[in-house]
Every structure is written in structure tokens, then in C-alpha cells.
Length: 135
Image (cartoon, rainbow, N blue to C red):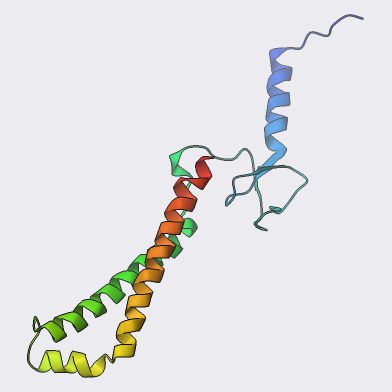
């Protein structure tokens, strides 16, 4: 049997058809056949084409949780600083009294826990985004 010579036009068409039949998950970055509509791992709706590669894979929705954790952590640190400053004498007068009365010890403990929790969320996001996705 003889071999069939393929023209460059045919190969380009076949390549573009293969690219069109591939889908990927925007969160997990796994590729699937075009017949699959949702990601098996996370349930996200798939996008057509090959998954993007490179350092710019982080999208806005991937940054919202760590950004919120950062803002909450900064607020909690600020409230902790106010309490410590009022107790240490860095803030004096009516402001110090208002802080000590308005922020009971249970709230100070809550702010401490919030700082630790925010740090854990941000650390987990960094590990998940920059270490696990490189594999």
C-alpha cells in the first residue's frame, strides 16, 4: 500500500480542529475533551482551547480571598495596636480610656485569632498558587 501525502493546508486544518476540540478548567488548569462541560475536580465550567501557560495565570477571582484576608488582617493588627498602645501609655487621655472601655479583652483575643487566621489563609494561597500550580 502506498502512503498518502498530506498537504500543509490539510495539516493546519487538522491542527486547528484538534485545538477547537480541547477544553480546560480555568481554576485547575486540567485539559479535557470537548465533550466534557464541567471540571471533574472542582465543578467549574470549562473553557474552549488549550489552557494558558505562563506566570499570568492568576485571575481576579483567584486574588479576592487573599486580598480580603490581607485587609481583615491589617484591620485586626490595627485594633491590636490600639489596645496595646492604650495599655502601654503610647496613647493617653480620653482616647486611651475610650479604647480600653470600648475594646474588652475578649475582642483583643478575637483580633489576635483573626491575625493568625488571615496569615494562614494568605500563606496557603501563596503555596497553592505558586508552588502547587507549577507541578
